[in-house]
Image (tube, rainbow, N blue to C red; front, side):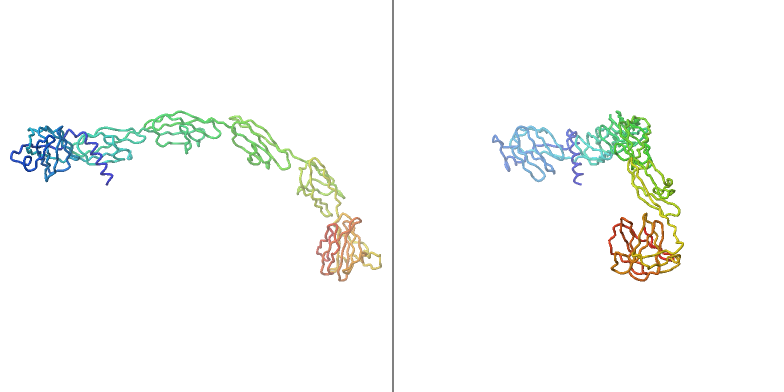
Length: 537
């Protein structure tokens, strides 16, 4: 309410200046009072010259007046009930009366001479100003309203105002200002002010592709094409669109009041569509940035590039290219294999050779152009135990694999097999087909080593160097022991240059004692059949 009162008061002020010629105060009468002795007897006052002043008694029910005399001045002003007493020097000619509410009555000329010690009655009527209701509506709703050059409201304005002529102005950003005069008379005034737009819109599209960045007068927008602007002040703008892989495009555009300016900018390509091919597992790089494996298709900006394909155990394929706008080059990159060779020989020959699960031929054979690295080679021949070997192929070198195949077919002696002790004693046992017929208590040994095995056995925890017994088993042969008494047994196998052993506990005969240190690795693998077979690997 306080704000509204201030606005109303401001309007009263700014619109009152045109009404000063229309006094709101009037003097119906001015007369001399012959029988009133106040100035001479009851309350006389003298002026600056020592003369007794005249008294003008101003009769009015209102208060708050200001009095301005002519050059002779006013000696004193006394406020009485319902009137003012003005002490005036004789010979005064005129009086100006002012009031904040009722305006100004300027230079009232006394109709009769003002004499010394004389009383005069001035009847003063103050008229209440007539006010009318003023309403101003604006479009846009947040426009600023000015009356007589002073701001009074934002948007709709309404107040009670004095009659008269009052200048107004309505303005808002992006709109043309409207101004004029309001003639306030004897009825309510409603003024609708619709400002004309001082803005337009800008629509921007790009071909052959959208999603281009936009700058207007050097300011980068958050939006990309296609783009429709918010209201833009009418005028000229420098528009630029920018998109990766295309040349920037700029243009001067004019935005007009209330119109949509449509603009389509054609982007010129600054790239080539490049296709790079390589082996399936090869890794493709462009300027040392990994792009993918096998193939890559994409755009490259105009310029020079280094493209590369790498593959394990290959030398990388590298090519320098120059990209020209609009080209569609295809680049084939083939890393160079780094190879060696493998020579495989077996005894006997004719073994199937498989490298990492792939059969490549039979022995003897020379496999060339093998990529460097480690491989698992498997040699297979019917009637022989398979051989698995890990081999390493080195660049430019020949790796040899020379193996003796071990016959894995059980050999049944046609006669009795002799089992004798190390002293060639007469303690001999017969080992025939019973070796396979016994269900328990028998040990069959199959030699799958590449060398002859001497198997030494005996009893007791303190087994002497000279054994109780020994059998010699050729590569691929099987020999048996049976009718062994319960006890602790130790088995050795050796060749002329190595002496090794391994123990394997077997409950039916007792525990094997494994106390001597081994110098060559090896083991007994026990296979369950009618008898118990120990395979020497």
